Image (cartoon, rainbow, N blue to C red; front, side):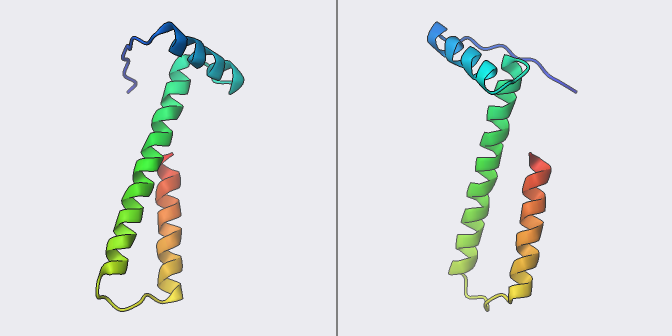
Length: 84
């Protein structure tokens, strides 16, 4: 289900958005905003992953094998792609 919301922005920002929509071949301003949100979601997931990896590295567990790292990498890449 698609939801709608409205925002107010200064004229200078609207000019910028209109230029980005045209330069990047978005179909609409909404498409541009959706892309910005997707990018922010991806950045948020990367921060979470980084924090989890740092916690794991700081833990006292035994080192992971190359095979386990590869499996974790593949799962992470799949999860990120599914959220885009």
